[in-house]
Length: 109
Length: 116
Image (cartoon, rainbow over all chains, first blue to last red; front, side):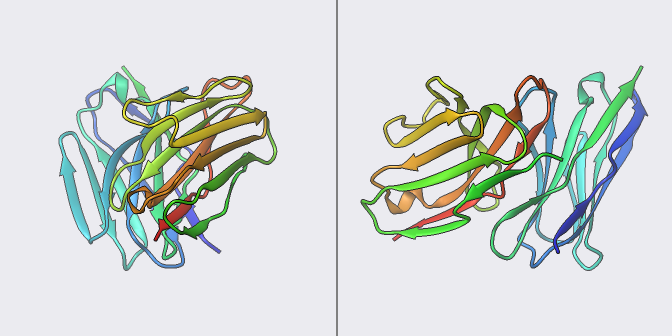
């Protein structure tokens, strides 16, 4: 079956760095997405990786290793507003999105 | 976790026809459902917010008469693409928020529409 695994919850300190991991097993691969979702709001797009390597976008970076079925989202210089859930999603060979359950990130002052 | 089911997962239709996509919350009641559209390698774009028993709220630039949304019950919302054209070909995904819940959204698997 198809499966996306990411930690349920993580805690980090304001100003620090945190890495959220995502491993996946899907039938085919057409890209991996990271979304941020604040409580009560729709998710917002953070990044898209389809080739191996690191994509940097401001304070956020996303890494992909297709051979390992692995990705991580790296958040630097954490701010209180970064407290949210982070969703990992993989598009499979049928272009269906397989979603992870999300990682709730708690930022402490 | 809660399950949201979309149907059909893939549909191919001729230009000028209408297509209906269903979004069902299987094990919870959803006061609010969201409809998104996604082009290849791009982010989900929120199209509209569907509220049970009332009219949907459409995002700017989304044609209300083109994309008809009905949320007649707490477990079902439908999106009808009317008079579909090739430019409507896209990936449509819904998500649902449980009644009384102020946070978590549950997503459907998505529906890929191809208009010939």
